[in-house]
Image 1 (cartoon, rainbow, N blue to C red):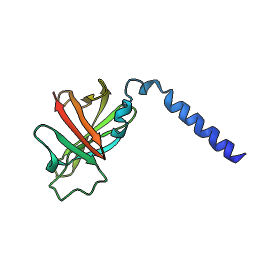
Image 2: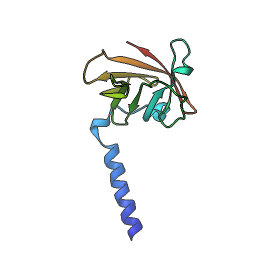
Image 3: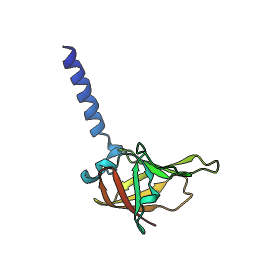
Length: 133
């Protein structure tokens, strides 16, 4: 009986999460599901205008700071910039999928204009993007 109760509770939670109208239109396309989470800039690996990011759990070489961003399933976005005190400063915003490989980013504080991230590749915990204004 206890297993049934747990299963029923999980089913209700899953149903509630998938029926949330606020998350409609801000779901990652199937090929971009791996984007959910926090990514930090692996600037050592950049190639021309292609920026390389890795999960925040990656063992990065020493650096004077790393920018990055976090994607949440519900369309919430946080951009991490270097703070005046050399730490990270988070700027909240939203993301929206334009298509299967382009995301529109808008920051709530409007300190910079909206921009697009074109996903060049996302495999083996390596994210390569081009940023477009």
